[in-house]
Image (cartoon, rainbow, N blue to C red; front, side, top):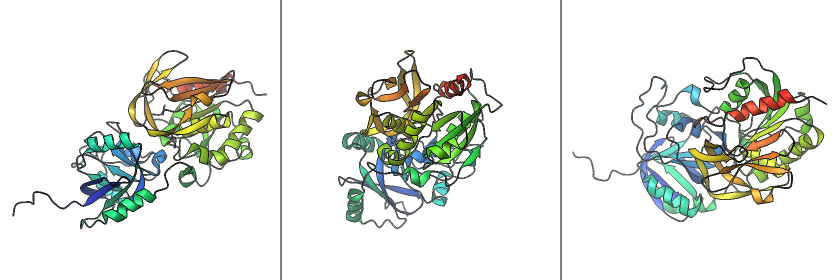
Length: 387
Ligand SMILES: NC(=O)CC[C@H](N)C(=O)O
């Protein structure tokens, strides 16, 4: 018998405005509801799906070939996928890579994550741009039975990421030491084989490659849970404090993180370095404000200008909130700016080794232009003369 012209869809993505996208399900079956974003990176789908900062979000991949190289245990940025679901244009083909251990679909299924393929991701991306990170419900049923009205209601009922503290869901339960280095330190950067600086990294949903970069820059890294207090941090007698990336609203997580950061700033002269959520919460601690962006920045080709040097870095990005540069207090300098939309991408405190960036210098996936920031952090710790 010839195949039917329109095989019954086995997955469906419904936006809060009522638009429906039918496709073919893969990964886990069931339903999920989240904010919908798009990521323009051409590589690194496994790293993206396991980036804890994607908690509460379904990721649409604008690059059409996703899944070709399968999955492997090394490329996870954390133990399990954290993104709520996955939307792709073409169904993944059989994996073709010597590194493959498990096809993407099985990997997702084993981790309870739903994916949909066969979607017009250009149309969907335009909808996301126009609507500004819509709330969406994603369902996968091999029988193809969908209660679309109920899915629309679920999407509409999603509270949204504003006001959500998701760091508490993805942070580590207990402190631990991190020793693993980067597999390859990029050209022009010298890997430090000896840990010279004691760094406490506060884990709001830290990507593993950030911890590897810190280790490769010469840091002895102790990771503490998101709720770590000033006293918890100082008990480790650190030479520097690192504030990690993470999901959700910086103002919500800031309710407990900002008082700790303020204590570190007020009571010590330690170098402080923050990435993404860590950047946003450092800005909040310094008295600035953060805002929810329309559809955020998610990709691996975002140009960022270093205002000190005039150099442009091509960066990896994943954020839906941003620091409002207009609200930076005196003495806090905007160091980096997005060349896509002029939004803030970095700050530093005048005269102190305290700074942070919105983009992801650890890449994974993405270009390696911004690695110097890890080295700068190590240099600041080396230069510090403890009081
Ligand atoms: N990658 C991150 O740390 C993201 C920070 C924050 N959750 C945002 O979406 O802006």
